Length: 295
Image (cartoon, rainbow, N blue to C red; front, side):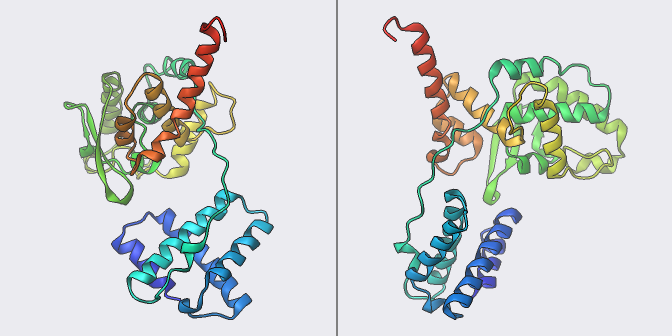
């Protein structure tokens, strides 16, 4: 079925993330197992859209959410596009497939007054670990970068003089994101703690380190954000991505241009950024109800 060839292609040529490759691998293993067991098919050329449609029906019967099913369909689209490109198939069977409708969810974000309350506590860190944790939360909220982007930041990527950080985003695309001047004192404090805590060897490595001088890892970053957001929010989701949503929502609420927010977030297209306008519209509705005499 040329699945391994496709996985090598997205890893080495397209430079997909480890998380995406892992997800594609699971989806394709599940699909190929179904095709073999149900239709005794081993050759990708023999796969018809009817077979794919029956797999989708099974996924829905098993209780998979429309979002999950659509993600698996997206995997198949990429896979069969690759097979068509390299001449392994003559027709793309996924072209006739439509996924189930997904109910759009508004991005979860933290209210401005709650963020103000939280950030007001961020004064006089007394250790490397405390300074690092405070800066992690501040940087997420001030820049809207992704967790993987924060973990991958190098010391050379942070330019204090220019108040810019160089971010390596999805598909190895670089972008520059401004730093608010209010972040600079905390950055200086953190770097001083870092210099006094670790040897010179670590000063040329990653910007954020664990207490053992190693590269930060996703679960640690999540725990840091969850700990601080728990102080001001009772909502279930308290992840780094919530701070990314918060950044985008607050920017748009204060009149930022949608295209500018798209560039800051590193989105490939405007549609991904437009989900944040829903929250802005809801806020406008609330203001309208309070302010208009006929509302």
